Amino acid sequence: MTTEHPVQSVRAALVWARAQLDASASPALDAEVLLAHVMQQSRTYLHTWPERTLSSAEHAHFLELTRARAAGTPIAHLLGSREFWSLELLVNDSTLIPRPDTEVLVEKILQLGLPEGARVLDLGTGTGAIALALKSEHPDWQLTAVDQSAAAVELAKTNAERLQLECEILQSDWFSALAATPAADFDCIVANPPYIAADDPHLQQGDVRFEPVTALVASDNGFADLQHIITTARRYLKAGGWLVLEHGWQQAAGCRELLQASGYEAVASGTDYANLERMSFGQWCDTSKVTSEKGGS
Ligand SMILES: C[S@@+](CC[C@H](N)C(=O)[O-])C[C@H]1O[C@@H](n2cnc3c(N)ncnc32)[C@H](O)[C@@H]1O
Image (cartoon, rainbow, N blue to C red; front, top):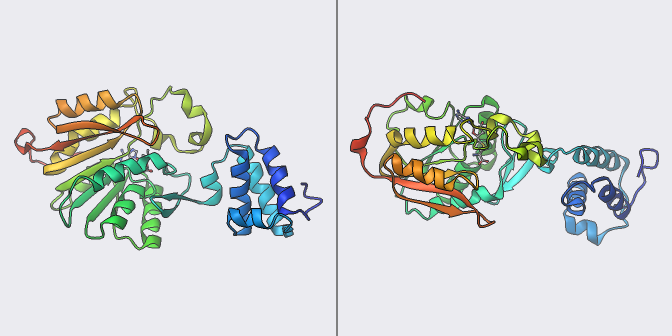
């Protein structure tokens, strides 16, 4: 498949692309997803009509996307969107591409038995994934979502508008913008913060190479933001409110220790779809232990 011979069948285009993408973990799938996107058809269509020829515009677009993918660009960045909790979210390079495993946090929160009209805070919302998934399940809940990145806040607002899911979205260094918000008392605070250690070799592999370091990396061996959130969230939780955190697969014991040392109760961890402990949570019951003064980040 070259630019000089743009008349190509679907079958030939896929054969060519699979060969270009042999460094990918899933060359056949990548090729099909990209071609389906270019032709604005389903992957089933490609299998049903393998002799259909590509227009020269489709050919040029497919060539461009396949070459970008071969250079490592994440599929989600090439398509401009990623599905999370059956919501189609726009994505860009300002924040993390939502991961399927983050859906276990949404599942956990839905099982907590939060009250009607619950106030829920999503810290480091990125695309808005967690907040918007929760709002889609519980339209009566009041969602607040914050992110330090102005571009991520813009993206999350666009996603909320497109999906018609009401959510207060603020630019904030963790809790800092909430100090001025009246009644910053939440039934649940959820966060998928940066938690990768700066020297983790995985940062040089796969999609994360194209995601901002500010969404991924935390100091103190990846624990700095987790620790800050665990300590500070106590001031923003109602008595009986829950803190639910995503973390790395080797950080569960450390997070449980931090939660227990900070006075949370019912502390436990949960597993992701690969059965790895990637989420920990605790309930804040004793408001007398923390100053009621709000402020700081
Ligand atoms: C791992 S990403 C999670 C994004 C999204 N919640 C998800 O699960 O797909 C972490 C997010 O935290 C944001 N972030 C990093 N430091 C922050 C801070 N100090 N205050 C608020 N947000 C921060 C990043 O911009 C990024 O969007």
